[in-house]
Image 1: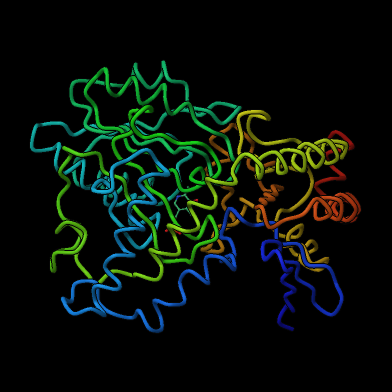
Image 2: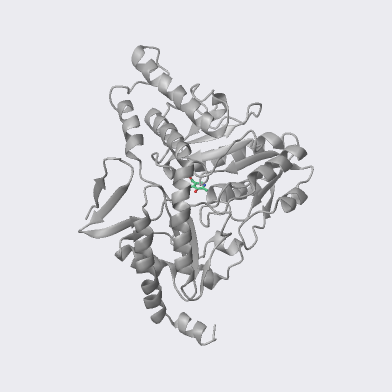
Length: 412
Ligand SMILES: *Cc1c(COP(=O)(O)O)cnc(C)c1O
């Protein structure tokens, strides 16, 4: 049955119920619901303001101005200039454009080496593998047990062939925040371009592209209550990437195609709201995070993945020995909790997550992973509910697990 949604007068916290059963959406790192405020801001662009921003008559102009205001808003949230913001279809597209664009541009100067980390999103990792097939060389930095790149190791990997460093701002599975200002300073010192996939960080962590020496930054609307299919790439003034899509003159001639005006306006309003309410939201999420981590750590043979302090306030990632991640997700779903596990990717493969392997987990431990990710639309009572239902689920799954039996009898 389709979840019945109750929207409070404040319009921010959405509680979902199915047949009176509690529903807790705890997979905000995968995607977030569009907030009522964002939806309201978008609606006129499906209705009376439907014009093409490139048209000269007034209906077109009525869409052009909001588009440019949206660009101003996004730029202001990042400490960038409006002319440095290019709207795209999302995080994956922005990552592809930044990395392939910079690589191809720098190859003309004989620079064919890229530095990244082992636990990037696939939009970055698979882009790097595609470039390796073209003849580029890629260094994949270790992220160690705490899930954080070491700036000195990054600096040591730079050669006179290095074109680009691409390191994510915050990891999507374990939430660890990378030392971006330090990396930016190193790249600047060595004259190397620096891109960051900030899809998980934008709206959750204060970002200033100028102070942090970021040359290119990817973001995606649907991770902060804007719709899916709209994102942006910040490209510092003076950096000319090859055009992403040839055609019309949209996005300063670099990415042709009639703009997704409604989506872009929605993204800008969502981002502004996320930045405006960031401190308050993070204080609440931190409280929830601390409570949940402390409670889950009481479960025998559980471990928190990634640094406890240097992580997004909304992210919790755990492994439970002797438990299959997929079974855990199914059981949680039966209790109305939507969560995610790194153990199976969209392809349905049984390979454990590259992120959990990158922080040194053994295959069998990485299989028992659970990611819970929260947004400002979650309530503290969601955490209380998870604390109530999760430990008995882990216990039941272990009672049925031959692996667990082997672990506690010292045979595994
Ligand atoms: C979600 C995500 C992406 C992909 O963004 P899309 O807009 O879904 O293409 C890229 N990188 C990170 C870190 C993400 O979390």
